[in-house]
Image (cartoon, rainbow, N blue to C red):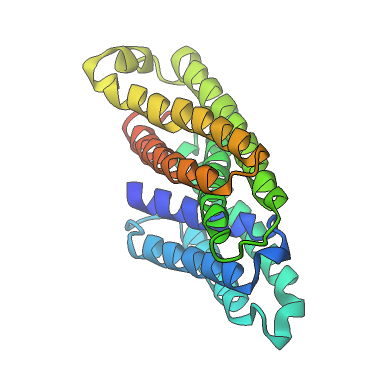
Length: 255
């Protein structure tokens, strides 16, 4: 289940970013990202647990078909239909994440359902933004003439998704302690809470610091340094989000 959630959120997150990067990045950039998203979602479907909501499976299948079609039409005569394909994949992906979240929080208080949905959406945005920023930074080796403002734009998006993710996690922690899970306070203060604090350290503080450093290096147009930081940033985001999925299953709190 942890792998299923992580891979589906990362794959959908990458799809969300396809509409936010300039075409100047080139055909190969979009083809690479679309192919990566398709592979991640396909692997996620392979790890889909028995008894999972069939609507989630259907949504991921539609998103998979749309991104594969997008990949096949990049740079070809059918390129005019690509915005519609991406739009379909994004809408279906958003709906799938909400349905997936409701499956984990169904029957609980409405604020818990809303926070779980916000957690899934912000997780996908953070993962997708970090991954695409890292790949775009690397793309300056492929297209040295690519303007640095494109990297600056995606880093801004990454920072924004980071801020939203932190706000959602803080709200979930306070809600979990005060309203939904009376034992959550004891959990995070016990030896078992080491996973929670690792999640906070690697998944929130780490990316927050590294994304700021990336922004500062991007401002001085040092794309190689920014890319190096983004590699580490993406690693910390991955560690944090994998731990977040584990904690959701262990505590039912969407941190």
